[in-house]
Image (cartoon, rainbow, N blue to C red; front, top):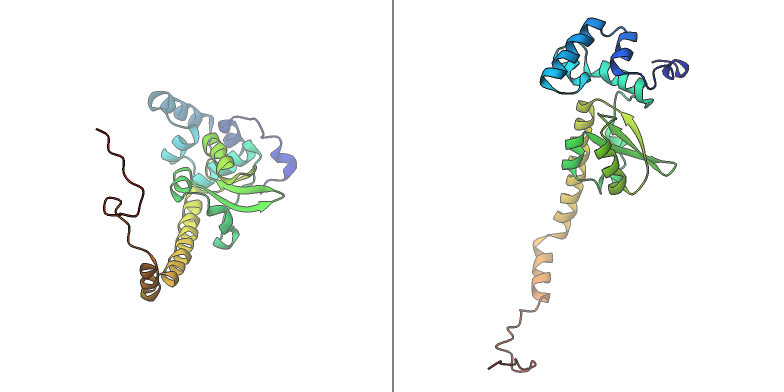
Length: 196
């Protein structure tokens, strides 16, 4: 854990500079990574991970320092507010590796694997209808929680449907429904006007 007074010295610095200061990479690593980025494209941090120079955890530590956002290492299912995920499609959550955790002071605390995913950030503000307080977490941690929480939520929904859908209930509903009326066969309805 890096003390807050030291965190501020990293804010606004380039990712490579921060990783060098953390002694995670060397200037030579930066050159190789920039060369590969120029040739093949991609994000600087992701290239470092692909080249096995750093781990995702080290990248997230550097991103946390750069952005000033808190890095969380674990997320338990109980930390996730079911009311927040009820309006968030699972496909969106998985695609962007984001999970809303809780409401604090009128803001949704949301774990992101990429703190610079502006599109996901803006879309989430619209979906959740509240301002966001982002935090950073590993992609695998977020995806694992997404799977557990959404499975649990679908289990509750299935149980509710099972309760409602007993055979007797369905038969009662079916008896209460009237058979649809065919307007051509009905003599008591308003006449159909024929155009000649």
